[in-house]
Amino acid sequence: ARQSAGTRRRWVRAGGGPREHAAMPGVDKESAPAWAHAVAGQIAGMVGLTVVHPIDTVKSRVQTNAGTSAMGVASSLVRRDGPLALYRGIGAPMVAYGVINAVAFSTNTTVLRYLREGGGGGGGGGSPGPGAGAGGGRGGNAVAETKALVSNPWIAGLIAGGAAGLTSSFVRGPAERVKTVQQVAESSCGTGKVPEKFRGTMRTAATLAREHGAWRGLFTGTGATIAREVPQCAVYFLTYDSIRRACDTAVGAEYETAGIVLAGGMAGVTQWTLTYPLDVVKSRIQAFPPGTYGGMADCAMQSLRAEGALVFFRGIETALLRAFPLHASIFLTCETIHAALAWVREEERKERAWSEKNEGTGGNDR
Image (cartoon, rainbow, N blue to C red):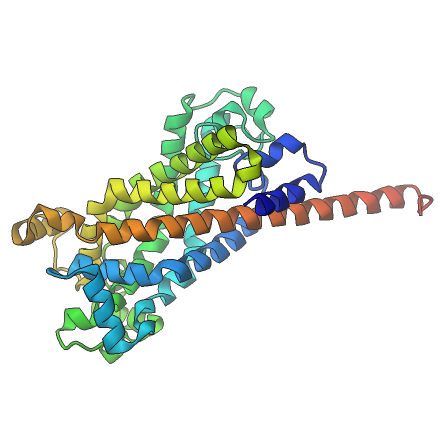
């Protein structure tokens, strides 16, 4: 942990930045362009999904099938179809997760900056969360000179996170619809085998669009996705930033990597603990053909009457087991990539400055 944190701090300080900025959450991302968010989000998403997708497959099956246990589902899948069956449906989220992360993280930063600066153009991006309103990044002085639209940093963090959840849902909804259909394909069709039309991400998406139309086939459950993502993301970024800053204050920058892992993992656990019943409803709506349920309320009432209140917490232990490593790996990868990209951008800036200086002096410094 100490070595990795030191590497990130050297990347930041290599460009001449103040030493104290290295330990600030989000300092490497505050001036990052859109492509940097996309690169970091894509790679972080791929790393996280590779680690936890088998757990997600088990979670989806437990949520949509009564009388099943996580261990029973996993052993049955591996015994019947081999270990790769646990990675079924990974194609859609693997492709989309980079876009989802890029949209969510950039929206959160943009909205938070707007709320802090009153729509002004000055100031750096800072990091999301309660500390950002106090000038947590390099743009802190500029932020202090403008009137904030929302002065309470906790409320600003919740609004920005909710906005991130709303915008990213329009990518996440269709991706999770395809993923969920693939994950439960053989159990929902009643044959015990995956139908040919649901083998492969593109084939599944094409089948859903052909049988139900593009909108209903692919966007079924997107409303439920929004209902889940808005509160999830509202607490997600706020929890990460709060724990990250607490760790930096308590143990210092030498344990920066451990702080990122703890903060990222706990952010994931917190958001799932608070919104898990919504995810159960979403999974059920997306697992079945359009029209099976008349909306979230109808799905919830049918599930409650048929299986009791505990249905809304079925598989929660699997979801929480998945949440910590997924979000710890996402934030750790994102922070590391952003630090590396910040170092590259700073090196390019110094190279340009050196070239301009030599051009201005006619090369006398050489």
